Each structure stands twice: as C-alpha cells, then as structure tokens.
Image (tube, rainbow, N blue to C red; front, side, top):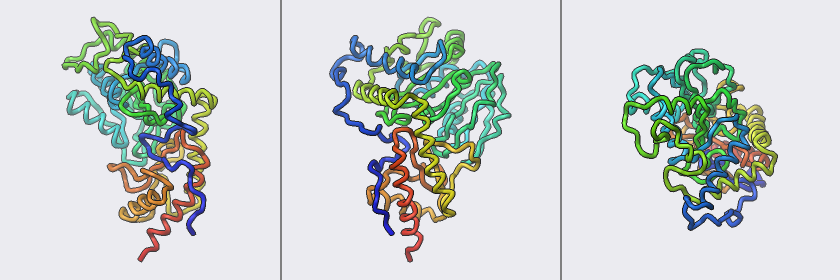
Length: 373
C-alpha cells in the first residue's frame, strides 16, 4: 500500500544539497547586499567565512582557509595548476570526479611522471600502493560512487610529497585527519546546503612552502594565482577574494556555519550524517532487492549514499520519476556516469526523520514499477 507519511523535506539531492532545518532566506544577515566585497563590511563577512570555518573544523595551527572562485572544481584546479610539477604524481581515483582530475593532470598540465591508481565504481584502489615521495591527488569521498576512504592510515606522517584532497562531500560530515592533509577543497553547496559558485581552499604550511618555492612552467590564469613576488598572497585567506563573490551566497554560508555551531559543532554534524546512513543501512539489510554500490562496509559514504536496485535501467528511472511526482524525494537518480541506481544525500542538513519517512516510499515505488505488466 502507498505510505501515508511523507518526508517533511523531500530534498535529497547530492548537490546543491538540502538547506539546514528551519532555513529561511529572510533570516540571513543582508547588510552586505549592494555593498562592495572590498568594503570593511564585505571583508569582515568574507573573513568570517574563512575564520569560522577554521574554528569549527578545528584546523591545526598554521593552516589557512580561503574563499576561491568556481566551487570545489575551481579550488581543486587552483591546487593542481599551482602545486604540481616538482614531484611524480599519484592520482587515486574510483569515480567520475577523481577521474576528471586525472584527465586534467595528464591532458591539460601534460605531466609525464603520473601514476593512475584506479578502481571500478563500488570499490577502492589499493591504497598501500601510494608512494609517499610523490604528490598524491585523491577524493576523500566519492560523491558519485558512495565510496569513501575508511581512514588515513595509508598516509605517511613523514611523507615527502603533498596530499591534495578533494573533500567536497566529506567536510562537516566525516572525521578528517587534518595533519595528514596538505590541501583540502570543498564547496558550500555540498557540505551544508549553501549556494553554489564558490569554493573553499585549505592549505597546510607544507603547501604554502611549495607555493613559495616553486614556479610552474606553464602560464597561470589570474584566478589561479596565489603568490606574488614569490610570496603567498595572504589576503586571499583573510577574505580578500581574487574575484567578486556573491555576498548573498556568503551570507547564506555564514548562516549555515552558525547552525553548525548551534547544534554542537562539527562532531554533532558528523553524528547526524552517520544516523542517516544507519537508517538506509537498516532498510537495505531488510530488503533483498536493494544494495549499496559500495562493496565494503567500512567504505560506505554517509553523505552520497549510492544504491543499486534489482531492476532495469528504465524501471529505476520510473522509480525516480514516481517519487518526484509524489513530492517524496527530488533529484535522487544516480550520477550520469555511475551505474544505474539511486543516490540519497545523507549529510547533516537532512533530518533523520525525513530519511526514515522515505524508506517505505522506496519500497512502494519499487513494487509499482516492477509489478506493472
């Protein structure tokens, strides 16, 4: 029978993600709207976006946080174009975004000494093969595969190369070992349901040392430049952005950070995400027609929860459409390059009660599409 209780918030998209519970755009601090981002008020808001992020995440002393152009993609590309070259590179990838970074390194930067450590959707490459003398590029959490690295044990404390981590769907939802990561990138629209177009770039002192001691052989686009005269442009990490940001998006992000602080900080945000995964895991265990795409339990993502279904590709599409039409779940089809299936966002801004309410609807939709003549 058709379930009677619907999720109060049907937004389960993996990006842009659901707004925080109780969100109201009218509640944003609008004082910066219509003002220059270079005004004292604009710089203060942008500076808070950097400093409050560092404070909530508990970044080590000397780590810098900057707001950069073009979402997580822009932040990753800034790191790749600015830092790679002096050492061999290991690219660890097992889904579309990580594979995209590999393509850029090979075909755009045209680096020669590059190793590809790769695996199919649902599994991780052999992380023990990573060479600590190399620079390493990897995603902490595969947004399109639902597969995360389970820990940082494979990252050497005495590494010589830089660890460059695309963490756009892991920050504020998973425990990050900051001391083992030299560059971390994420976007507001993934982690906390913020607005798109802006990226966050976190640099360790080791990454800064590389920036100040190495000049790439290729021309550097203006929006990628982080040094001047061989020194880091510190203003980028104090809110003096390279290009003009949306001050409305900044206000929106500050609201999200305020919510994280109010619920008890990043630890509570991680708990909320893990509780959402537990709801789905219980449902999967009870139903033999639905499965996690991730093969190993320790690699299950709590944010981009990717599922396969014992149904044809056309039937899966019908499930997604049916749930959308019922106003139960929006935008939950698998990523276009991933295996056919469902993808549910389980980050902290999604309420556990909504995830619980969705599960019977998945059962109903499956039965509707598989029992049709």
